Image (tube, rainbow over the protein chains, first blue to last red):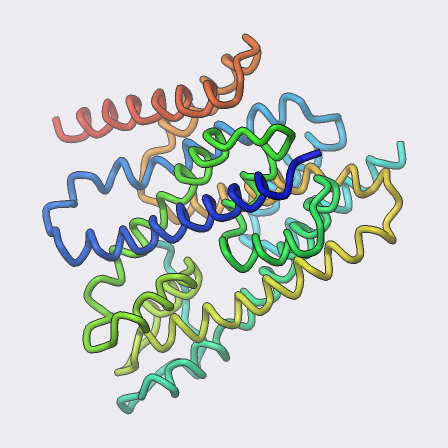
Length: 99
Length: 244
């Protein structure tokens, strides 16, 4: 059981971090034009973080979860339709939960 | 930045006020309001499976307003909360917001600090991308704010709805929804990969490094920074080679 105070601290921290990235980017954009050198790294970071979370989760996943993930990636790549890919992925998860 | 075709009605002729641009932002957000709604329901169900309370879902969705960040946090939501790991993962995933904020630097001039601060709070990828697809003389801050307000409304109501629905869903299905986080992140990863000019090698390196460290039973707070560092090294190597 997680304590309420701990949860509030975590949520406050998350909100502050996300806002700081939005506002920080805006302030950087206002202040510096030389920031272009950082752009390739900034473009790379979110993808690296997502992959570092997704792949271990996939490794831990059940057969249905791995299948759902592959279906979602395939549909997204083919159709670019977020709603369709997510719905089909969820359907695979739900069907997989029956077995 | 992803290229998005603006709907036909978004071809503008006259100078628009903040209010008009705000309303235009709300109207043109419809497509993403639907997918945001879907993500919100998923987040609500996933939050229920992580033992959240109603008020915690509402506060988190209102205070953070970022699907990828919130789903990433859920991945580590176990007692005692690993705050450093959660903060690091959310920061790394949110670094794309830095580019988003930077892209707005020249478009908020003439507005008060408080108005800019509010807009930055609800700044979102689809709103910014769609605004860059617009033709005509409109107020970009108004447009992005309207777009963001519509998505925020969708996000809050749907996450609460998903959480409320979770109690009527059999436990086995709610438990299976705990994997909704990686699914949503996968959709975002594909969108991100297709819309980015960045080379994919660093992402592959980062993912493989995370897998290896995971197999070696390292803790998440070690895996994430090490894997991302490996990705950054690969990015530097790729950039150095492309410069040569």
